[in-house]
Amino acid sequence: MSRLPVIHSFAPVADGTARILILGSMPGAESLRAGQYYAHRRNTFWRIMGDLVGASADIPYVTRTRMLRNSGIALWDVLAACTREGSLDAAIDERSIIANDLLCFLAQHRGITHVFFNGATAERCFARHVQPALETGLLQLQRLPSTSPAHAAMSYAQKLRAWRSILRPLPNKKNNKNK
Image 1: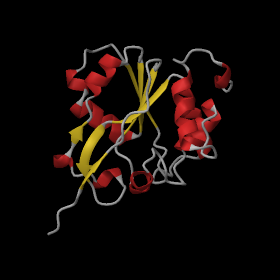
Image 2: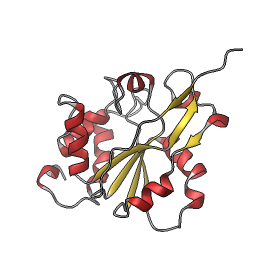
Image 3: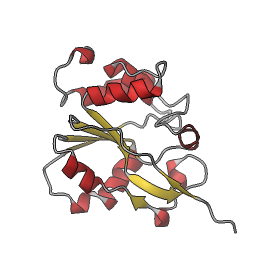
């Protein structure tokens, strides 16, 4: 039996102005190859961010991530490392999970008041590996529909409608015109 290699997530996209944190579970194979969050062409994350804050997939990645930071949005993953065959969250070996140090991250980014989970696996891993050590009631937590192409049960319009909730805790900025 061959042993799967350990995969590692990326550094967070964040600065001191972050008001919200969007958490995924672990980058997929295409994202890991590209070294970019949500690099799979059929993942709707950047399309949604384009509609919400102008950070669309057709502009350079560094510009997209800067637009997120300028909008008060931080982006990271719950998992720092794990083993997984392929890209599906269902293939993550639960015994291999190492969580990112989200407690330290949140202590360094005290302006974050809302955490949004990009899908059920991110929410479940956060609840299991992070939330027990958090002071209760300090953060608003909300699961959003996964932007993964594997989550095809919802239309793009339905996902976008749900994802609009990330705009509520953000300051009223010119680039949040779709509020």
